[in-house]
Image (tube, rainbow over all chains, first blue to last red; front, top):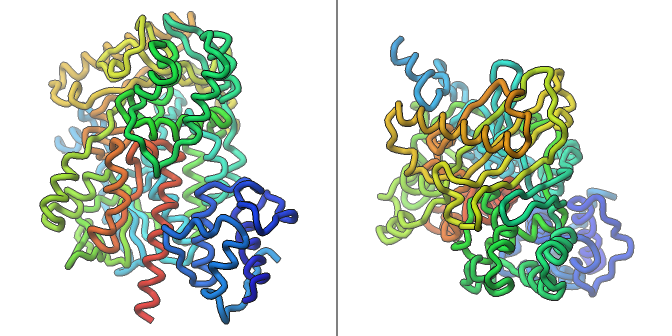
Length: 90
Length: 494
């Protein structure tokens, strides 16, 4: 997956977790929490979905890296190398 | 025959004996076995079954739900035990881990009232209205109140200062016993905490409530648990009630299943939604842990228990709307430990109106009074003393209710008390604890899998996780760990 695809993948996971949020205006640099209503349970759900869809394990002490979309992309890029993007809510 | 009769009509009421093997036809292996179908166990089971694992959910009682429960009595009465109430977060939790249908039934209470010698107020129980009362009714400055709210809102689990709730109140509102009462009493009834418990646990729970007030579930607890059971089956969870798990099987520091009713059923992982101390000390057994660890677990304090009085209004009678929740006391000043006094002066009334069960064919009202209580006060009474004390509890409650809402007593045709003994009997919690363990239990619960591989705990612990919302969310937190563990396990096998 490319960086852009990873950001799409994360947004698709957020759509599953928070179906009532509008994700069109999300930017990649500000904390997700400041842009939409996400709490710590939502981040746990993102971690679980990443594991379910892509087999990626994010250790608890590294949850913080998922704070922004850019952070997600940086962290996941090497881990998702060679994997296909899976859109559930396309 | 005699024994059977005793079992049904013992002094603490009875669960009917079940003649058949409750595990007949169960498989030899599941990815996951969940012991206990409280909100934590059910939610963990649902999340992990949806993630694709095979899940067996066992419950010792015939009803699912744990303390989220109800019961029926002759005359058309249905009593909810703990339906009032929870923070708005329950709506989101239902939406994400259950269904939209469940989430849509989570609605705010209309009114919360306080009546005691220090103040008499009605509130929507959120930050805006509490701020208004603290300034207008209690005469505090806006700055003082804002600083308090900012402080508690900013608290999080990872930076515990060691301050107690009492110290927190004294810091912001020194000497204001009335303000301490307003802030503490509702939370004491919600999770069994007191001024001596950590400020951090208070801050998290109080802020959850203050975001939007107190919520309830329309349709009654039986409706909610019914929908959850339907959802669990759809997710593929195998539900088994009346299962008394005797042992969690452990070999070389690894949990590999359960033993119950002559069955040994193996599993990749086990989640216990039983009481934390019972899980470690009884279901696993002290011989499976380091002696030092066992000592520490034995020292974990349990939260207090409760008494409740269930009052059913006669068919055809109506009770005009008074409020949904009434925190009341005749005690002159607030005294945190006294909330647990046997026959104390403080109690909470929950008023349940027909609008809470729109589907019910009969439009009935019930009132449930709750007090915090110590198991020790009730444990050793003789049968005769026990009946006398329950009768006094009923009578005191009826007198208090009649003083608050005159004319109600004459409309009541069913009165029944539950005591710490009742809670122990139905939940099998040590000391009849109705709110799990004190704060220190949380770490032991979260780290159980570090002691025994493949064994996890979810349930009422550490005060923060001791209400409906906390328990359900803790089920998800544990499910996340189990999901990670089971996926690694599957990879190893492959």
